[in-house]
Every structure is written in C-alpha cells, then in structure tokens.
Image: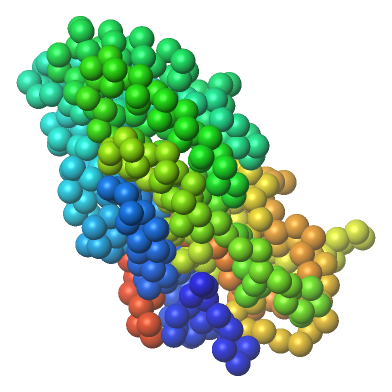
Length: 426
C-alpha cells in the first residue's frame, strides 16, 4: 500500500497536501509517512510470528532518530554497522538485547563499545577479528555473544554493488571452513560465547528461493556445529527483501497508469524458510531496512530551469546526487511525479541536479508533462539510502526531513544553513 496518493490532482502524503507543505518548508526536503513506516514493520513482524524471532531494522537505510524511536517503541530491534549507529540505536530506545552489530571493518573502540553494551550479537567476519574480539573482551572483563558471519556462496544475480553472499564478495567466512573456526574458538577463546551464525546474501531479492537455498545450507551447518558442542541458538538471515520502485501512483505513459509490479511478500519468505528452521528451535533474526522505510519517503524538489538542446529536453531541479545518490551510484530507478497533476502533453526528458558531475541525473528519458520553472516534483520511494547517503558535496547544505502523521507534520531534522558548513572546521 502506498501512503502517497493523488486526490483531485494534488499529491498527498497520508492526509497532508504536499503543495501546501512547500509553502512552509523550502525545498529540497524529505517527507516520510509515519503510518506507512509502522505498517511496513508490523507486516514483516506478523509474517515471522510462527517462528521465535526478532526483526532488526537496518539503520544504514535511514537513521533519523524520530523514525528509529517509532520502530523501537513497537518492539523492533536494530541492525547496526558502526559505533555511531550503535550509539543512535541506544539513544532511540532499542534494548541492547535486540541489537546486532555487523561489518568487516570494526575499530577496536567500536568492538569495546559493543561488548560493554551487551548487545544480542557481534557478527564477526574473520578469524583475525575473532582473536581481536576475544582480547578486547578480556580487557573489558565481559563475555560477548558471537554470531560468525557465514558466506554461503549463494549468488542472487542482482547488481554487483549490492551482492554480498557470493564467494567473491568481501563479506563473511567461507561456509565450508566455519566448523574448523568454531572448533578452534570453543577451545581457545573463553571470552566468546559462540552462540549464533549470521549471513546476508544481498539486497533487492525478489526470488524467495535464494533465501530457501541459504536456509538449507545454514541448517546443515547448525547441525554440524551442534554435534561439535557449539551452543547455537541464534540464526541471523540478514535482510535484502526487494521492493517495487515503480509505484502504480506514478507509472504513467501519456497519463495512463500501467499495472503494478508487486513487491515480494514477507510471508512468502517465511513460508520458504520455516519448514527448514523450525526443527532447529533457534531464534531467527531478520534485518530489513529498505522494505520497511523506502516506500514511506519521497524527496520533494523544485524545477529551476527547462532546457531544450538539439537532442534532449532537460529539467534542472534543486536536488541531485548529493541528496539522492542511488541513480548515480547504482543506475537505480525512482519514479518522478508532479505535486500537482495537469493535462499538459507528455514529453521525454531527463531530470538533472545542480552538481558539477555528468552522473548527476535523477531520471533519464522519462515521459513527463511539460513542467515549467517553479513547479514542484516528488522523487518517490526515497526513504531508504536517501538522506543516509547525502553529503555536502559542492557546498550544498543537507535538506530537512519531515514526518507526516495524518494531516499533521513535524520537522524531524532541520535544514542546514551555510554556517553549518563551517561546523567542526578549525
């Protein structure tokens, strides 16, 4: 379900008319649907209800404190990949026993922070990291829960930049050598509670059979580890559930809506893995980020100029790759729609930003109405990896973030000013 809809030619977020919002808040800014965020989390949590589980929101997708608090208040856990994200998760109210910490490059101070906090699991990526964690736990004087990150060599055939579960990726430990590493850790590393395994095979997964293949490999691994005496009680299957970036709200060619391409249902994932994991009686951790927050957010921008060249029509807007890098980084697709529909003839055009890079193209060869200078557009499905990847490149202040609840809204991050560009500089 989309919480962005047209009503009598005006685009709304929930019950908030967005054209009214731009009269109060300068563009560009991100806007999020509170009820959409909650509904997405509750749908995933309900799908896993037949298994002992913890849903851990991946903070890398969006770490705004107000959004995190909404999830923490509803029993969600947190998946963090840095000491900073762990700090934010704790400040947002996520209990330590519902926080997992992954990443191939954890600094010593970050590892000590996790040990002292007493999180659910530190997801360890290499034998050397195990050695370092054991040494640091001895210094802290506290045992730490460990889930070894397994690379199951399952290729989800997605974009190479978001593939994480194949043998050529930097993540995790080859699943075939994991028993050897567990055996050595059980004998020589007394400060490590080797209680879990973790994997994450990639992002934007639409075929649930990839999760099924991974689950089968993990089941065999858990059974072998238990025979060795490893007290495995926790299986973290990562995240990666795909979503549809082409919303029916905006899928228009000459004003005609195209049929919706559905996103995969979390229940379909659970139906694939439950028969495999149920006999193990492990708690299952799942780490969605994009599938909770992406379709709850949009980036609102104003058209600055229209330009016709010999071969191309361009619309220049006041946001770009510095505030939504996904199109430049991955060639990612985002629908672009006007805040106010009109009956102008549709033309093919590129939506481009102000950054001095040829890659600063938000939408290429799109059928759009003949929009004019001063009109406003919404770049849809931008709630994940939008603001979290934003920067001050070319000296642009970071945009505001707005949370809508029904017909009400609140600013949950204020827009930066030029003075903020000097902050922390000598």
